[in-house]
Length: 510
Image (cartoon, rainbow, N blue to C red):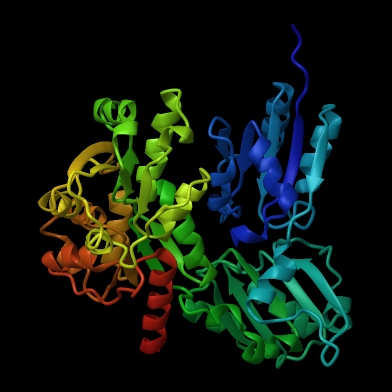
């Protein structure tokens, strides 16, 4: 049986900010059987791929090649000839110093169908994120993109330095750090003023973006002093001076700060995106993982007797998710909740219910156990049956207080919080090097497991000088019991409120 040939998508992933990939590019990643990606493609984009897709890294960094270009070309063709949809994810734009033309030619030569999905090129986006417009009516009307990777020792250059030096207003050099001295020499020798402004931008559009400014006369020395290296874009021209006025990206409240997110992996992404929007580098260090219970006996028994309850209390979005997952698996649906009143602790829990077309009858003003007790304070509960599906280990305030008032309360395990396997050494090294600005905790479990993972005898010195942000008073109390100073706790116990409170904290520290 002959396998039909698949298809190759040569996709520009943009320069670094994962939000700069095109809609079509992301759609191609989502439907691919194989994703072949390189060093400059942001790995956050890989989270959008199918879980069963094959992932192959072929990055090239500072002259070190995982695979030579010829082998990358062959790999792309080989996977397509296996009948697979191949997403070749490349930094920037495939056809602007991306060797996409060579990969496309290889497809043509081997009869493999392909499409090119243009990307946001680093040539325009990196200067933009540094506050440098490449053209401006008061400064220049011309711009050129130039390779800075040309071997300066070869006898004849393909670049017309005499024309580039004085004939173009703004020059953008790709991969020019290694040959920066040669670039400067060629420009000045061919008539460009040594006083011309220059900016070297490393990791442009990312939250660890760095910019060094100078002139053709001193930029090489300044780059050495600042230890700026590849990947970097070099901008030459008067427009560089506009950075003083237009530097918008680096003025974000969290810019350049590494913030540890201890939420479970499936919930961390939304939190991380909010931090990225404000300029942070989120370090995802999940200290809990939310998993189904070891057995469903308790919940199954409760589901069989749903009609006997008058109230059901959901204390988290996870409780909602696992409850309705099991409800479906048992061949039931939301009609089984007919006649039950529903309490949701917090807006996110209420939002999770709305996904099932259910509206909570009660949402306490205070998003914690005490708030539920207070909200039910005037409600007669003696003899009333309550069902509380929740985590295996949780605070007992709600069931205890309701039972004191004569309620009949059934607590069942809907999910468990366990400590995940994660790269502890990588995160510990960031703490040791003083590169962590803040740690965020969204539950007592995240605090407990964080301390266990870093080590009870080691975490205190690692936390020196690190801001601690807790989502609410219960979490804060747990952190304080471990000797941590809680710097931030929002009035509303939600992720958006936590992010806003952190932004205000950093603003006051400026």
